[in-house]
Image (cartoon, one colour):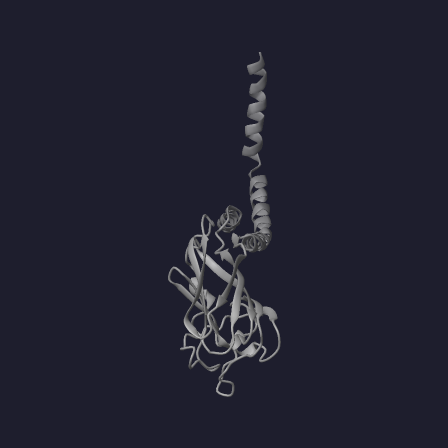
Length: 249
C-alpha cells in the first residue's frame, strides 16, 4: 500500500519538470547572471586570501647570541661567531635581517660580513669612508639592524662623529678591499644573496678591525629569517571556483 501511494507522487514530480522546461531555462539564466556578478567578488576574495597567507608566512626569530669578544685592532684575522639553525621549517628564504650590537670607538675601522651556504653579504666595509674622509666614521659603537628594505645605505648614512647610534639600514654591500673602499663603489653583496636558500645550517658572522689606533667589541648579534610564502588551499579553492564560474558563462 505504501509503495502504491508513493507512485503518483513520483509521476507528478517527473511531469512537473517535463512540462515546464521554461522554468529550467529561467533558473539557468539566473544562475549565469549570478555567476557573472559573483566572479569579481571571488577574484577579490582570492587576492585577499593570498595576501593573508603571505603575511602569515613562516618566520624564524633567532636568539640573541651574546659574544662579548673584543675585535683585535688592525688585524685581518678578526673574529668569527657562528649560529646554527635547525628545523626552521624554511626551505626557501625570502628575506633576512641581522642585528648587531658593537661597543668601542671608531666605527669606520670595521669590516663585517655574513655567510651561509652560497650566500654572502657585506654588512660593514669601513662605513663612512670616502675620498674626502679616508678614515671613515669616527662614531663610537652601534646597535643596528641590517635589512635590504631599509631606506638608507649604512656606508653613507652613518653618523661621522658622536656616540653609539641605532636604526635600521641597508647593508654596505661593497666587496671592495677595505683598505681602498669608497662610498662610490658598487654594491653587490646584499642580504638578498640568501634568497631561495634553505635556512637550516650554519650562519657565520665575521668582523675585523682594518685600521690601527682604536678598538671595538662585538657584544651580541641575532637574525630573523622569513620564508617564501607557499600557496594555500584557500587560495587554490578560489582559483578553481573562478574557473568553474567562467565555464558556466
